[in-house]
Image (spheres, rainbow, N blue to C red):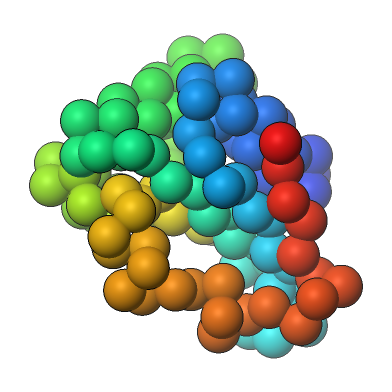
Length: 115
């Protein structure tokens, strides 16, 4: 799997499902954990759950790509889908403001905003 293409596909899919404030963060030079983070927001817990579940289903059925693990999806405050080289974080607004992951990884040139 090409991690950059997969990252872009995930961000495009989330955008098509009305996720908000979507960022791709290149963390290859910062951690051995993964290559990219995709960070997005849903307007409420219902949308966060739906975005996580639909994303997982889309790539599982269409691409045969399964997350290694998922966390927090049922609560709908912060869902994490770990695809190995790409980790997807989908927050509700309150949790995103609280954790503010972008702040930890942002150096300007390594962040791409997806419309």
